[in-house]
Image (cartoon, rainbow, N blue to C red; front, side, top):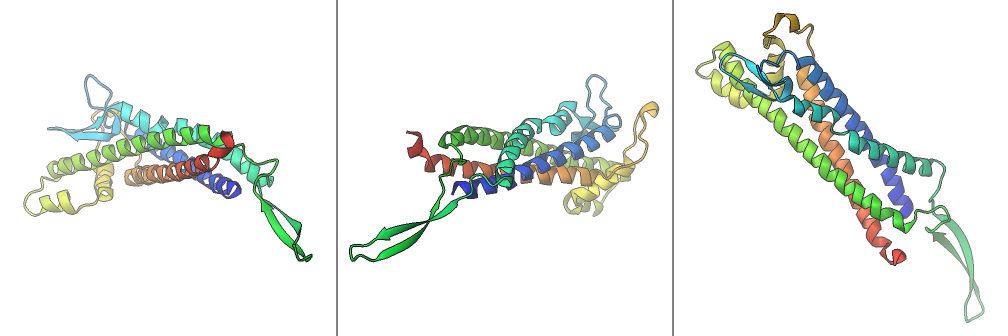
Length: 251
């Protein structure tokens, strides 16, 4: 069971690593592209594409702290995932912890000899039963942290999408049936496409050169944030199961 658990962890930690890296990179691309364009607040830095808001005569970004968190917030779980992923990956690559098979000869009362194949999970290179307690604590904390990150990013994503629907209606002076179409039928991907081409910088010296696919950046971050959460939850389940399984060995 320990070998199977380590094998699963050697795949789940890299999944969490890749997902976290994609979140950091794609959110950074969106943030750096829009940080000057949306920063129309006179007193605060509101150049974040998350939690943007529609005002009377412009479209302003959210507080820059949201983008700082979206870009750098996953560095902590990323560090733990890299360290533990390398550890379990190294053990799997060199074959440690793999169950060892053997044979045993048993003499029955009738005098017959019976050969039995045995498989031992406890090897000299097996994980210590004391490993699972700190691993469980770390994985639970990281799963909760990842859940908070995913929830904050999802909320910021939806707020920006909703607010730019309002701004888009003002931009095109939409009336009649176009209003429910934009508010209820237009996907967030399409909304962000309009945003890429219609939102211009209010400051000439900070005008935006070139365009990016904002929808792709934000959707990549959104999807992989929840994938990373799924990976951490599976890691928690594996660690908790092995923590309970090895309870007797720690007493």
